[in-house]
Length: 95
Image (cartoon, rainbow, N blue to C red; front, side, top):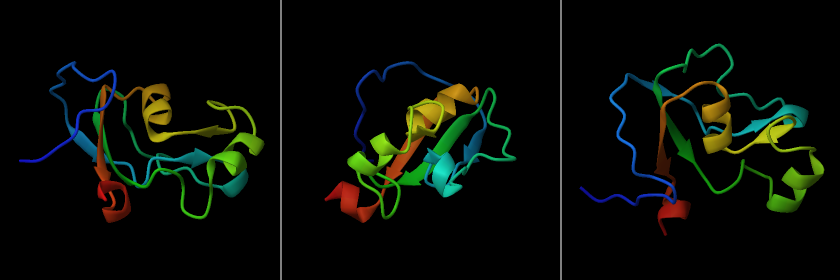
């Protein structure tokens, strides 16, 4: 019953759910959890930390341009045509 609503939340979506791994896209690291997953018109569920495992914000910024070379779960799901995103936070995020 416990959940946190993210900034910009509020729209209601009724759509099938698909699992999207950790949701992070990083081209230089070959991280593409939505490769081969049809998310168009669906709600993507990800299990995610604040950043991809082993990376920090400075490393992401040096990986290139957001949306092209790397993308956070929200941006990537939106680019792929998802209508919603549910982030299940790891214990680290929940703490």
